[in-house]
Structure formats: structure tokens, C-alpha cells
Image (cartoon, rainbow, N blue to C red; front, side, top):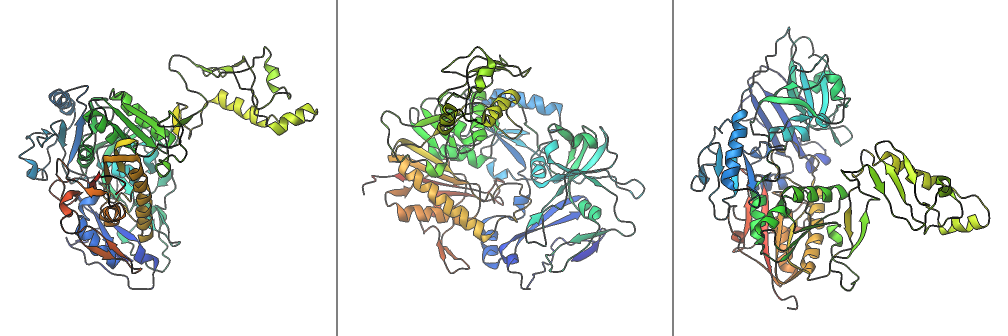
Length: 635
């Protein structure tokens, strides 16, 4: 443990202390050390595994990745608005709030294609509908902390803090702890609880939601930096909670009690931020969409054409799906799939907001995207509709069809009914009143036989359904809207396939913690991605296109996947991408600790992929794009 007074002059470059003891798990972890400095926000990310450390430093700026981009990238929906009209509306919105211009020169390399001003129009080929809204930072913030007037503070989760650094407000679900006696309208400092290594080998913040923060320790103030020692350390938990990373200052929108009583809403409205970026929550819905530049370029790399049938295999939340549909002028078919019911609903909602009609959504695990059994006259094999019913905004009644009616509600519990009987009832969702118009039963065939013999049949399942109809969906359940569930698609049924694969997300910015990733988890991601790519190859027709993308900087999930694809499927070839904004891929190989040699790109292939480095002048997230042309599959 390193103990330093808070007023200690910390050098610009710290001397890293390498632990050389017998800590096997330590070598497989990414360790984040947070450092609190007066008037400055710094986080140091260090990889302790020697084989992985140099690779990481070569492929990304490990300090830039913990800071947000100094601008927000916006895609204008040209089917509903124009770029100039969107700029005019956004300028009016920014004039009402703060519109500080970025103080650094991160966008200088794009001067040839970007106009000056707080809102810049991108003039790169084909990207004239993309806008950059500049931010500023890092800023020095005076938290006005004195000995006689303790600082009121709100501690938020790491994910909440990452969103705040991108311009969001502090919402109730992200609040972990708060100082005592905080009322609506108080000015508070906002800090983040970054996960720390526990003695059990896991990671956690050590803070229970709802904790009341106390003052600092009396006497001399110290800052403690943990370096994963093997000894137990007992410190004041309240002091530990306050040893956070401060990300700004804001005004509370509710009292401390309210923050932990309600389930949603803004808890703290940020006024002073370490990084100032405009918030676009609920701004010009349907006309603009906040999206990272590499994600927009991914849709262009796919080069969708009007009238084509395109598959987005991992579509949520729908940003790339809607970008593809917009490039097609809403003419053709874009099939967007995701394995999560609620995420499919999010895609539907976004498509409706943007007025796109060519998007078809369904629930499907991408690992099972290829249908095993063929069914005639059914290209998508939508087999079922999930959810028992859907609520209408114009009616408080839920109507379920029936095959058999009854005039007496009590007859619904008749033991002589069978499992083929279907429910029909009208449920007033406002009053909870159920008016029976039909019969319902969940009795099995065995129960039906018991009923014929005069034995008792349980109505527990029936009563459960009645309660569900009366009370509506639970807190953690879907809203009840209908989602098509697909059994998969026939091989060679798509002109183009986009596989934006689930990944380690090591390229997302800002990323304040990466300790949950280990070498084993990175290998697991790569294996999972190869299985999904195998599905994509089967679904695309000969002469088609596959675009593979990730938001990670790990070569094992990027260049290694390209090597696997080219070596496994000889009919695939890398294709050039337009526009080309990112850098070249990595050439060579890497020997892993288990002796396995991970092959990457070969000479001549590096300029056919796009790798976005967070440390580059583009100031984007870490990202990777590869485009494949599909030749005749019988070769």
C-alpha cells in the first residue's frame, strides 16, 4: 500500500511498482489505479501481463481511452430533415445552454473536410450528413472544500460516470451513495466508485447502494493507492468511500431520501464537468441520432443498395440498422435480429421514430441464425409471437381470443376443461377488473384425465395467469409488445450481412475500468465471434458482402478473425472500403502464454481493413472494420 498526503506533489510520470510475488491471478488482470489530483482528473491504466502489455500499448492510447472524445458525432436523418436544418435547430438549443468550444486541436487533421464553429459539417466523401458538436476539457473545478465545511458528495457507479463524462446527467439508478442531509437544490460533488480488487479475487466497489457518506478521517488526510498486496488491510470504510475520482459538480434534483426511494428520474443536474459535452437526450427525436463516427463508416463500408435484402445479425440498439436503411432510401429489406426481447423492442422504437419502414425485426440468437429445417414459402420462418398480449394507448382493455365462451366467470375454473381451451377475457388495466367472456385453463392432458375420473385438478397455474393479466408485466419484464421469434433463415438468403459482433469493448470511450477482462475471457470472445462468423458465411449469397466490425482494440478479436476467415473460407477475399478514414491493421503474429501462435494479417492486407486508434488525431473510439467479398461457394 502506498500512502501519500493529499497535498503531495505527484509527478507527471509515475514510477510503476511491479509486483513480483506469487500472485498468479494478478498476471491475468488489467489493473486500474485511480489517482485524485487537485484540479485535474487522471486515471492510469496498466497491464501487468508482459505478453499483453506491449501489444496493448502498440494498438491504442491507454490514457486516451479513459477520456471521452472531445466532440459528439451526430448522424442526421436525411429522410426527415436536412443537414442545414438540423444545424440551425441544434445551434438554437446550444445557445440556451453552454456551448464551449474544445480547447485542444483533436480535429485539426479533419480541417479539410470539417467547417469551423461549435457545430461542424463533415465534408468527407459521402459523410456530408454527419455533424460534429465540439466539447471541451479537461477542466479544473473548485469544489470549495474546507475543514469547517465538509464537501457534500454523491458517489455514482462506474457506468453512470462514463455516461456523465459523455454529457449525460446523473440518473437515479446510477447513484450508489450520498452524504447525509442532502436536500433538493444542494450543490454536490460527483465522484465515481471504480471497482477494486477484493481479497477473494473478484472485483467490486465495496459500497452498498444507499450508504450514507460520513466526513473524512480526523487529523492528517491521506490518499491510499492499492497495489494488490497479499495482506489484509483494515481502513475506515467511510474514508474509503470518499477516496473517489471526481468527475464534476452539480445540483441535486431531489433529496437524499428521494434518490433511493424512486426508481427513475434525474438525481443530479450537472453544472460543472471535467469534460463538457452537450447532452442530446430527447433532442430532435427522429431527426438526429448520436452515433460514433466508426459506426457510421461501418454502414458505408457495407455499401447497401436499394432493393437488396440485408441482415444485421446483432442489431441492438439499432444505430447501424437505421443507418443502413437510410442509405438504402428506405427501399429494400433490412432484417434486424437480437436475442433479447427488450432490445428488439428498442430497435422497433428507433425505426418508428426515424420513419423507416423497410426494417423487419425478430428475436433470434445469432449462433442459431441458419435454419436447419426448410419450410416451403417461408424465408424467415417466424414461428411464434412472444408476449400474451399488447397494450394499446387508446384502450385499457386486453383482449384475448377464445374458442369457447362462458357466461359465468366461475365456470372458468371448471375441472372438465382441457388444455386446448383458450382464454378470452377483457381486462380493464386501470381498475384491474376482469370481465370473463370465455374460458381459460392450463390443465395438462393428464389433469384432464383426472378431471374425467372426478379427481381434483390444481388451478394454481390458472390463478397465476389471472394475476398476471390483472397486475400487468412486472418491473423486470417486457412491456408486453409483440416480438417475432424466428427459427432462423435459409442459407444464401441475403445479399449483404453485417456482423457487429459482441466483443470485449476495450475500445469504448471513456472506459474507466477493464479489470473484468482476462486472457481467458478475451479468448472466449474470439471463439464466440468465429462461430457467429460461420453463420454469416452461410447466410450470404455468392457475390454478396460480409462486413465484420467490433468496438475493441484486441487483435485477437480483429485481425485474428480476419486470418481465420481467409484461411477457412477460400472463396472470401478482403475488399477495399469507402470512405477510408481509419488506419491500417496489424501485421504479424503473437505468441500467447500457452504457446499458441495467434496469426494476424499478412503484408498487403493491412490497408484493406480499418483500425481506429483512440490515440489518433481523429479522437474516436477504438474500432475495427473488415469487409469481405463472397465468391462462388463451390470453389
